Amino acid sequence: MKITVKKLVLMGILTAISIVLARMLSIYLTESIRISFGNLPIMLAGIWLGPLMGGLVGGAADVLGATLFSGVGFNPLITIGPILIGIIAGVISKVLALNKCKLWKVVLLVLTIDTIVPLFFTTFALSTIYGTMYLPLLVSRAPIVALSAAVEMALIYPLYKRLGGKIMETDKRAPVT
Figure 1 (tube, rainbow, N blue to C red):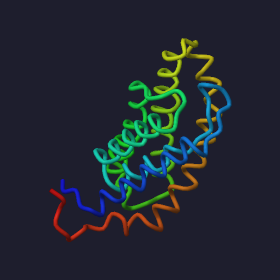
Figure 2 (cartoon, one colour; figure 1 turned 45 degrees about the vertical axis):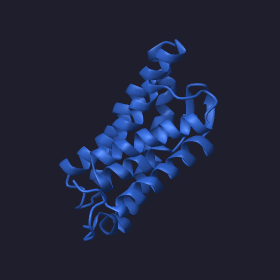
Figure 3 (tube, rainbow, N blue to C red; figure 1 turned 30 degrees about the vertical axis):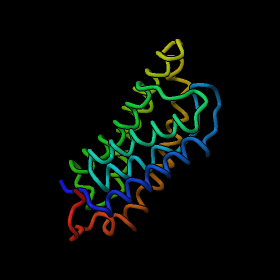
Figure 4 (cartoon, one colour; figure 1 turned 90 degrees about the vertical axis):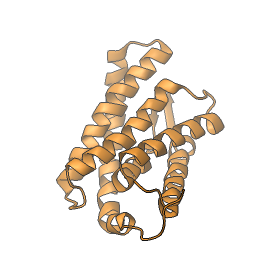
């Protein structure tokens, strides 16, 4: 796998967008429930750049965002979530051959990711960190995760249809060493 300047720049842009969406444009309902669309750029990184770079974007966005813009600070257990989102998005997009973009494939990708990571894993992490009971937290977070999933599907599909091919074009330039 070669990392080009184009891929590095795209990773930086998606990381920055994720930080802005997750840290500056999110709404906290409680300490463990927030409305945020910071996972959207991480999913796009996984889809467009593959699982490794998607995971790197997720990790970088969470570490930088938590360190620089969060009153709570960095927590490695929470950081696993965004990393998993980027990795799973990359793997599923390869398995589903998302380059032949169909709405059902995007729906399946987003539902799988949002069920595994924000709903189950992140809820587990938050219940561990805050010492709250898992099941009540899961039930209270489920509508927010469903709302986020609907918005992510509505945005990923047209973005991929419009930009996916251009972004995923093979770069003929030499890799960055």
